[in-house]
Amino acid sequence: MSGPGFPERTEAVRRAAARLCLALGWAPVHEMTLPNGRRADIMALRPDGGFVVIEVKSGLRDFQADQKWPEYREFCDALFFAVDGDFPDALIPAETGLIVVAGREAALLREAPAHRLAPARRRALLQRFAVLAALRLAAAEDPAAVVELRGALRVE
Image (cartoon, rainbow, N blue to C red; front, side):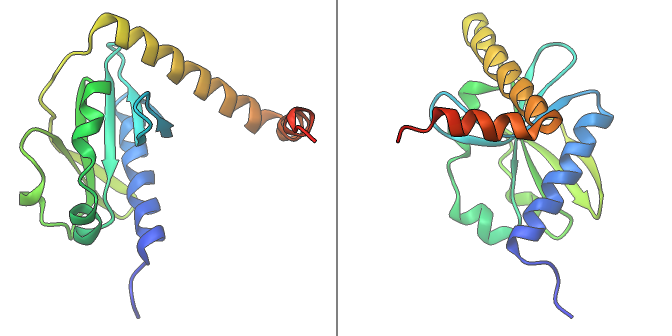
């Protein structure tokens, strides 16, 4: 029997990394678009107000094919990769942190070097993060309102 496919594996790593965020007291938001147009797999707000970006990799091919990770650095205080236990973790760049996933569990194996955001950028990211989180919460609590709003906003 074969293992999970690419999307399923990515989703499993993302969920386990998000669970780790919650266990660490970090507030994760999935698939947050950054001001440069890139989409962070997970953007998490730490209790100290610092932002973490976690780039999820489903395997070696995914890692090798996608080298845009340096473009996330200017929008976080710390950058991590989240990979499963089969990933050759020696390939993860030393200037990033490492989260390794096994099943539903994840462990922070290497802390990311800090590179503090400028106050103005932090404030702008905090507003973007809060608005996105609030909109997603509103959509989860009242999906019909989102459907109605989208319908009302359509230009016909």
